[in-house]
Image (cartoon, rainbow, N blue to C red; front, top):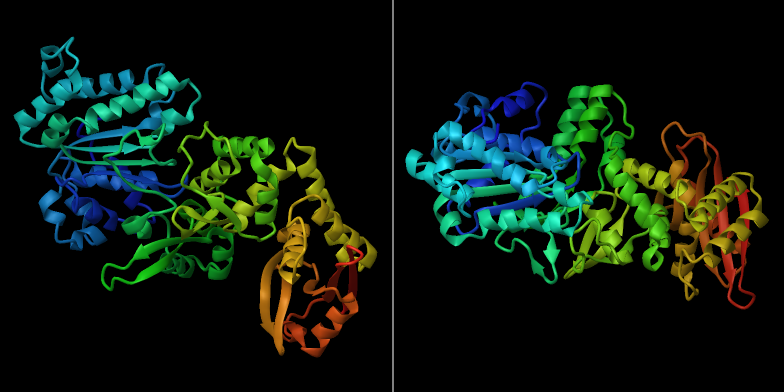
Length: 532
């Protein structure tokens, strides 16, 4: 099961509809036997970690002949393909299968030794009772077979995501250090190690527990970016085969931008990244919808939001409203149970895929809700929050949206004032940009019905905020114009004078023009709403 497995896992994958991601094997081949041979690639659930691991197992294992499986796939055209194909002993571990073990390290060691006994009888007995029993047995197999080991460890952090105490976690990390930070053993016996997980390698204090691993995270995947999720071209090809609307797939499952350097040109680009499991589910079912459901992460999500570290709830509300929220990702300890600040929680949400991270300088950047699928789950987490303040914010936003549709100008002005008062926007105004932040926060419930567009070019200028109804939604389109220290009527006059509704002339449905103003002297908001 664990040593020199066959290729059945990957054979099952390619027997169905498979989006070719075998190019990742070429990247791993580049580091076989080099000082860079310890690789950890982390990404959220449902982003193809196990598919990648199965392809590596099938390719490297000497326990099967996999040539026919890879014929015609991307890796078969790589110059390194023949050199490493089925050339190594392989240890394949899926750590989700060991999460319930009282002693994870002991259970893994025993499982590997049992398989080694079948490969080289007596290898375990020979070293019984010695501290190097596992590494010694693995070394004996290398000497006997002339083949080094490739380690493929899927969900490496699964034991760390279970609350069994720090001691158990440290035992598991110590076990990994024994294999991959042991200069004598690692140099001789390990050709390459590839680990997947949700979280980057855990830190203890200020040092990485496994500092020799090269890490490629969801926030910074570097060369692995094209293999993290589905790219735009891959989604377009799937959509064409299944008769799906590319724009709808993008709205529901896109939103992650991964930095990448094109090796052919050296150009720095951003790769659009779609959630693979969700895209495939939508294509198979012929309709978009929320397919990415993870109870473990969802429960953690609600827990952190309820804790409200440093105004985390307000940050999530702003993100749901379409805003980018600042986050410093460098101090997070990469531990799901060691969250002590809003930055920690926001960084964790980025690693889990609930927020998309955009780097700005160093470890600082912004986070935002990436797509409709994630927005729906975040909204559920907020609506089920045990924190009364969050529930009140959501209720007030729902009421504000209904008041807008009813053209109740006083209620809309009052709702925007409430959004400012409950702290989900700047504490004070200094320009129309601050007023826009308040309005967007107040209209977080609009995301249920609308696609928000800021500064939409239309007529003879830019409309401040336009809310376009989602496909099939009967809600009216909204053109919102903001004014600082002027009457809301002047906002309506500007909308009409500059012909902002021009871009919606083919819309065909109802259209409301909404003017919102703020008086710096009286500290009051006002609203004017007319039908176009």
